[in-house]
Amino acid sequence: MANIKDYELLQQIGSGTFAVVHKAINKKTRQFCAIKIMDRKKFSKTNYIDNLIQEISFHKMLDHRYIVKMYDFSWDATNIYIMMELCEFSLSSFIKKRNRLPESTVRIFTRMVAEALKYLRENNISHFDLKPQNLLLTRNNPNSIYVLKLCDFGFAQHLSSDEEESSMVKGSYLYMAPEIAINRKYDARADLYSIGVILYECLFGNAPYSSKTIDELLEKIKSRQKIELSSNVKISNECEDLLTRLLQHDPDKRISFQEFFNHSFVDMKHAPSDENMEKAIEIFRHAVEEDTNQNYNEAYHLYCEGLTYFVPSINAEVGARKVALREKAANYLNRAEEIKQFIIYSSSAPNVNVMEPVTKASSSSTQSVQNALEPTASYKALYEKCYSNDQLKNGLEIGKSGEYYAYEHKLENALENFKRALTILVPLLNKETDSERKKLLHKQIQEWMKEAESIKSILETQRNIEQSSSDSNTNSHCVIS
Image (cartoon, rainbow, N blue to C red; front, side):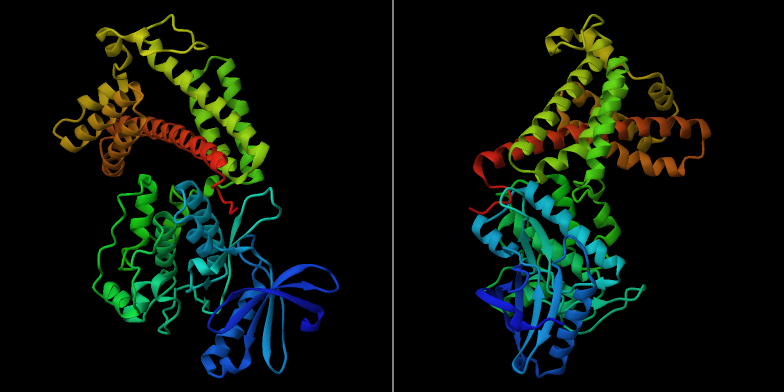
């Protein structure tokens, strides 16, 4: 156990109802840390003592890069002390200084929270007090990016595998799930609602139920007042979908933990890591090989796949390395787009050179357009087998319109149509009884899924390059000056 006399207390860096936090330095090791100091008189009530014991016991066993590390604890006749990893400031102060955060930054922070939450889930722990004040930002040195870390486990709770319910009121009302505030019967899914509120505040600058009084806040919660997304801030469809599903009042309608971890906005699969960077480099190597061998369709999809692993690392870097990664991503993106143009136009203009930029002028005639967009033999065969299945026919026509949009390089529209088509066709595949039609439908779904993923990769790469370039120019990305 640590001895408080081994530490020199420096400036106060935080305070709350039951504690103050000081920056401190270990006199022996000269290591900086944060010390949470709690007045023992304030812990006379049994449940407060329980919370404290709980915080210490939970926190000491946790070891994760996105959770504040607890070093040790101590006490004397007056106070209780918890020695923790030193962070620079909270997400709350970060938002207040910026007013609101760009979606690219919010996405990075959401992924970090998701990784921490997944780790807690694996240890059967729920936090129950997630809020911007309990999410701290730190960095290894002035030239590295800020990372977000979860802290304060005073309300955390061990849950059994069957998600046992609790009835004790926990957390801060503004970020509290409705089932806690109203019913006082809740389970681990309450943390998901809190994440939704934090996400909302990051994007729009204030919590969805911001109120002047607790009574006003509780009235909004009890009446299930609809949470409106501000029209003044443009967010992606993926971000809006996640936000809407997190902020469901009914926990049974709320997104599940697994759905949250797998959601495309969180995209934990492609999170920045050495492993994913190595994977991206290997995929690009394969793409260049296929490109050299003139297997252009395969090369195009490989370039796009590589970008999904490569691009997230851009925003995880700063300075010269960030610029270098951004330039490299732009080169791969440009090559993918060149190849896609070649694939589209080569059927109508056989003399097009894949190494030269292709313009629509090279394929301007009506006949050329018709040739380029001629349905494949398998599509024709499937369409002819629709018979009286209007739903299948509708799905195929929507998907085909996605191809038209892709030809016109209207990628947002193309992606939207491919998604709509797949939403219709995938459930039909599971119900299909005709073996030949099922085989053709499966082939068509696979083609459009692959195309949708590649278009999505291109769009996200474009957005990330633009955003990271803008952030570099304005010094607004994860940096407080």
